[in-house]
Amino acid sequence: MDKLIIEGGVRLKGEVTVSGAKNSALPILAATLLTDAPCEIKGVPNLRDTNSMFKILRALGKVVEFEKGKVSITAGKNTNYIAEYKLVSTMRASFCVLGPLLGKLKKAKVSLPGGCVIGVRPVDLHLKGMRALGADISIDSGYVIAKTKKLRGAYIYLGGVYGSSVLATDNVMMAAVLASGKTVIESAACEPEVVDLAEFLIKMGAKIKGHGTPTIEVEGVKHLQGATHTVISDRIEAGTLILASLITGGDVLIKNVQGKHLGALIDKLNEAGAHLLRTDGALRVKGRSQLKAVNITTLPYPGFPTDMQAQMMSLMTIADGISVITEKIYPDRFMHVAELNRMGAHIQREGPHAIVEGIKSLSGAPVMASDLRASASLVLAGLAAKGKTSISRIYHLERGYEFIQEKLTNLGAKVWREKE
Ligand code: EPZ
Image (cartoon, rainbow, N blue to C red; front, side, top):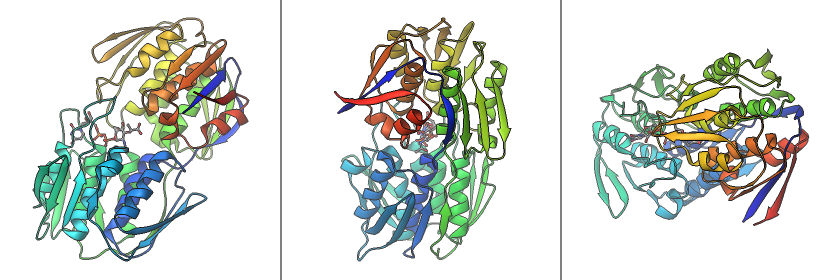
């Protein structure tokens, strides 16, 4: 396994272009299971997670070609309705093949995804939605077995104890598009990636409205055709790059950014005293003197994204004052706290809260990545720290950040790989 070495203290300068959104590409790729017709998805990032989804689609009978961000998907000779544990357990998002398989083939056998370090990751809302649409659902040896004679539209309340669910909304929406009659999903997730999926389904011939609001309506159709679609830019990568410029006191022009998807983050950064200049489709981010500490609470979109919590914590470790960070989506999503403290940060964990007392500067140290966004927070800390930081288990980082080492090097960062 490789580790990433960062010689910190360099102010990042220059231009960088954000890649397509991983969390949009994954459900859209799964949605191609709803038709035998060819589909073309552009702007797909080359990541561990997207390559995992290609493997799953191939195992389900699709022919998948991927080149320069474009995925061409056509039907293979035979279809399969079983998504194996060895594939699903490596990437939780593959669980969203359940809805399309059930919609198209009227049956599915999908491994339960299992948990990960950020939480138990239940799928009760996914299964509640499928049952509401008339599927017979059972659990056997770690697999969800789903079958139905016919899916019927239904009214489904999909709010969970932590609010709306992104992938459950995706899964239920994809099952509903071929159901007979009207489905209403109440307390649906409003994330831009859910909207992007709905737009793709509409291009395939689905009848959907209200996507992006808590109430999505789907009018079932008999058949879906193929479609071509370009996924939206990755708002979490954009947010991470914004913080990379701020934490190093840099001056970076970030291109292919949809500012409207970053409202909560930009609002918090303005409150902290950062100055972000919007130009068409780009954002100029100039790090200035020390930022003020601000309090963060993660919420479903359009609230502050949980996927930016770890990265924001890194920025707050060297802010002026005390920041209270409250994690309301995954209360255990604090694996990065111990690692940041190894770099000299002063962070105290109190249940779903982390209290961050800002210090002047971090010091480089050997640290370990535990999950995708925690690894991003350690990269940010390493860029800002005095001295050398080595981050082990960086395969976590490669799940969600396309060409991140090259992007940072092009901005002047001193970043390289070494064998563990
Ligand atoms: C999506 O995961 C994202 N992944 C996650 O990003 C992101 O953190 C999460 O949404 C929240 O924004 C993809 O889109 C591939 P949820 P998802 O269902 O859909 C609970 C990253 O870093 N819940 O919205 O799996 C759940 O435990 C990843 O890119 C239930 O209780 O998350 C959590 O507390 C990490 N029952 C809350 O809802 C369910 O059936 C929100 O989870 C499903 C979820």
